[in-house]
Amino acid sequence: MRGGPGRSRRAIQGGDKGMSWRKQKTLQLHRALTSDPIDIDTLRSAAVGEGGLLSQEIRRKVWPKLLNVNVFCLPAKPGPAVRCNHKDYNQVEMDVRRSVRRFPAGMRDAERSILQQQLMDIILFVLQSHPELHYYQGYHDIAVTLLLTVGPRLATAMLSTLSTHHLRDFMEHTMDHTKHMLNYLMPLIQSQSTPLHDFLFRSEVGYIFALSWLITWYGHVLSDYHQVLRLYDFFLASHPLMPVYCAAQMVLMREQDILSVDCDMPSVHQLLSNIPKDFPFEDLVSRAHTLFHRHPPSDVVKRASLQKYKSISSTSFHSLLVSSSSQRPDFVLCKQTVTESKALLPRSQNTLVKVAVWGLSASLGAVALVITQSALEWGPEILLGLF
Image 1 (cartoon, rainbow, N blue to C red):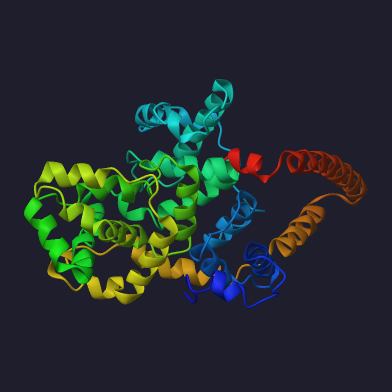
Image 2 (image 1 turned 30 degrees about the vertical axis):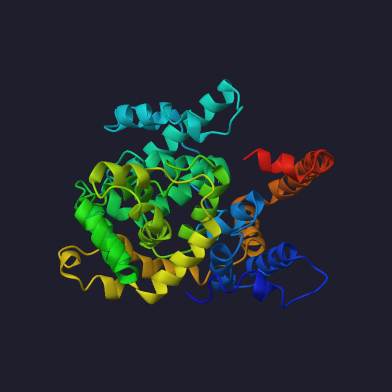
């Protein structure tokens, strides 16, 4: 993967001097999305670089591309039928019911209830489609972030791909592969600070404090939704082990705080379990990305404790990178979909289809215009507050 945090504000400012870096980055993303094939390297670099993908609208367009998901070939919207006799239904329902704080503050109970039903159906649909996968507590934290960002159908397709790639190690019938991923943590910390590593070792804190960080992509432990989205931009564009590098870097950035507490498990665990609300996440992303390139998994895995297991997620990542590099832009996929739909219809129905599409487009366009004008009147901060 080319690029990285360096292709952020400094790189973008090399363009039009009269344009803000956010506008320049938005334009850069648009060009990457409309090139044929799409410029996946630029999309990945933008997701990692300063500010990430900037907005919900951009995420809805870029996130599927990062996972090679065709937005014009999505699975049907999961329905309640998937709940019938599913072995994980009771556990999924309990976890989803407890996920109230993962939804935007102030959301009406009725609206949240609908989303929770959709969340259950998405999770059960993916598990039903991939019987080799095993549900784990925390999986719903990743699913709800996708649902709130891209909607149920696209979230289903994205979760399916994530489950067979980035999250695959967590979805084994035992936690052996998850423990394997966590075993990268201490060697990474030692590579940057031997005193900190030795202090953590003496405290016997282990790595359990980072378990929820890893298996939920930090969604369960962060209360700020914007921070969660920033990390998801980063992880979707990166190697499956990046959340571990992020955990190591987060610990390293708190070295002075850690060394100032008593060297025992309760004291250190309590400190590490509480991530400060003002933690500098942009700095974290940049440093974790640098740490990954300085100490790639191929180097870290040579340590004895990491040789027993092989990461399934890491093994499948190369195939995802290859397949995502030849994606067509959405306007091409849309034309192909319309052409294929016409070919399946009798000639006499083609005119009716065109009229229906024109009418629907006009209606949606009018609605979109009203919504946009209202949003602009209220200001962008209101739009940001919706998420």
